[in-house]
Image (tube, rainbow, N blue to C red):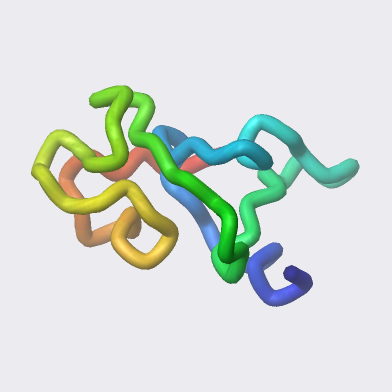
Length: 70
């Protein structure tokens, strides 16, 4: 998970560990987790407003619904 500390995730992307933060303030989302179930906060579903999956592989800067986690 050390590599994922440098990734920026959409603020609207939620998972069971997405509510927790490290001591430095980064969200503890592990994109390599095999048990993670992602939800979009905007739709409350496993897909975003554009119909694409809510997932660490899909929720990036290239989506119109992306909200950076500051």
